Length: 212
Image 1 (cartoon, helix red, strand yellow):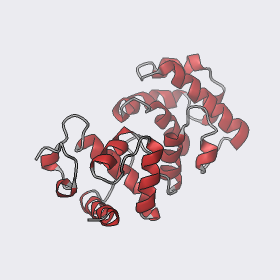
Image 2 (image 1 turned 120 degrees about the vertical axis):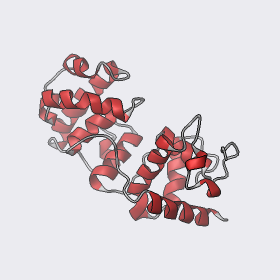
Image 3 (image 1 turned 90 degrees about the vertical axis):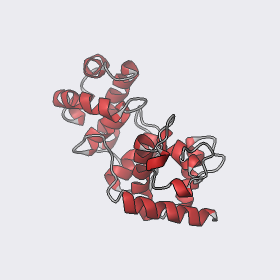
Image 4 (image 1 turned 180 degrees about the horizontal axis):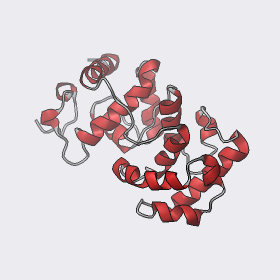
């Protein structure tokens, strides 16, 4: 099959087997989501969801976070990976939102990337989840699954993968495709022991080490 056909079949399977796919980070508004996504770098969503309730109770709005200090925030996130850096990023993010964006989380990837602690992946998550924009965040799961399924080819960086995926995925499906790939990588196409016997994409998969 050619590449276009491969994408079409993979998308069809995802639509059939995972009709609802969304972030597992708990949040009720854009501020809470950006806090959670910053915390999620090299940390599991499960751990982040354990941390955010107390953190957001103490700093319920971007304005509360903006007038805090990294030391204040650190006490609430110290069980997370890299708490020193993340506490600085969270306070810096909040202060920049207040100073430059009137406390409102922007919708464009370019503006989001002006915030401390927000790289392209985080910006794409926010733009996609909050504003339903055709932005596709590539984390380790997306990078791995895309390569194994033959959706990305010879991609050396997350940006390489992103560019290849958005070329073939219909624009309206890009926001949900991000979650399809993440969740598939998290629960089925895992890094060390992929559950190929439970995979509904196995017959389409060219991964040479698949376990069938």
